[in-house]
Each structure stands twice: as structure tokens, then as C-alpha cells.
Length: 100
Image 1 (cartoon, rainbow, N blue to C red):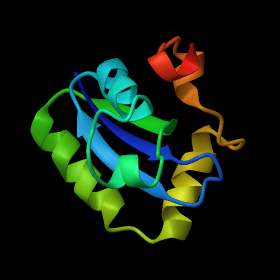
Image 2: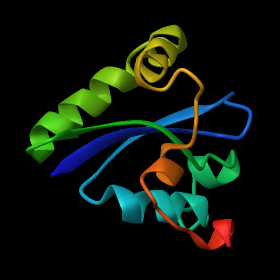
Image 3: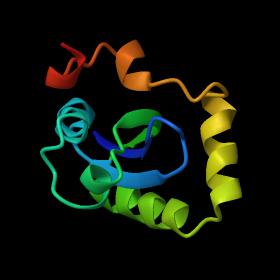
């Protein structure tokens, strides 16, 4: 299973789209700032959207598609499943050091 996901920061001002084969591990890495770069710099650690695919090629294609969208279209995608922009990692039961 592969996942395309969207993270944001506390104020929902910045969004990041990524792909992974282990959503729980990847969210943990983002929340604990283990990944140097954009998400660490902008404190992007709230999972607001994800979808799964069966193969990596489909996931990468979908990730690139979403990355090419306008911010408005990305917001609409997030709000179609998560209108309150809640942190879905909490709902999924993902734990992280930052939550302790």
C-alpha cells in the first residue's frame, strides 16, 4: 500500500504534499522534525488528508498532480473529507514524541 498525503502547519497557512509506503512512520518523522527541509522549517506536522493506492507509480503520479494544483483546489480536496482541518493522525491513533 502507498499513500499520498497532505500536511499543514498549526495555522493551516502552508501545505505539503508527499508520498510514502508507511503513513504512520512518515507522520511520526514529520511531527518529530526528523526530516530536514521544508516541513521542518515551516513546522508542518498536521496530517489533514491522505489517500491510498496499490502501487508506487500511481502514488507518484497522484502526488505530482496535487502538487500542480492551485492552493484553492488543494483546500477543496482537503475540505471534501476533512472540513475542519483536523489532525487525522490523532483519529488514526498515530503517536509521536511531540504528543507526549
